[in-house]
Amino acid sequence: MADTGTSGEFGTFLHDIFNEGQLSRIHFDEAHMMTREKHFRPKFEAFRRLCLPVPIHFITATFPPTHEQTFESELLLIQPCPTYIRAKTNRLNTQYRVHEIPDDEMNSAIAKLVDEEAEDLATGEKILIFCSSITEVKEIAEFLKCASYYSGFPTKDKALLDWKEGRETVMVSTTGLGAGMNIRGVRVVIHVGKTYGCSAFVQGSGRGGR
Image (cartoon, rainbow, N blue to C red):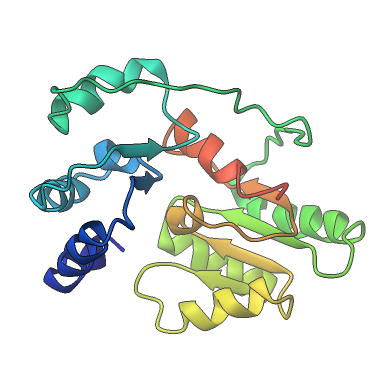
């Protein structure tokens, strides 16, 4: 979407609808990615050069107050300075558990946990497993005989569609599905090993309970 949003055709489209009085504001979802993923910054700068005189809203559920200064300085949000509107992000329908498992027992323990959780799933409900590397995704997905999703996987779109539509119950993924994915029926989210940080953990866990 970053490439589409900064293309010449899309820029012309935005100017056209603004001139017709149909553009009142612009929203950027998952805005925390602009400081975490460096390649988004030049895309935002290209978008800002469109010079559209409308308010810009940045939306994210994982943006602690300690990131505000970095966000403002790196995106040059100086005139005017942003106004921050915050709401509680804790979800009352979510429970957290920690399982300590030796490395040599990881795959079998995950399979056991998935089997236990699957017994309580209703029709169409799903399980999502996050791994920190593509190697782990491949290994666990092969062990579980389930769907997988990661960058460079040639059939990842089909795998995601099969999981989304209920033809697959379990999906193993990198953090590529940790943001911007809004799929109903994800009842169990499993993080294998350490995450990239608290924000990544909260972001990934937030895929559940929708």
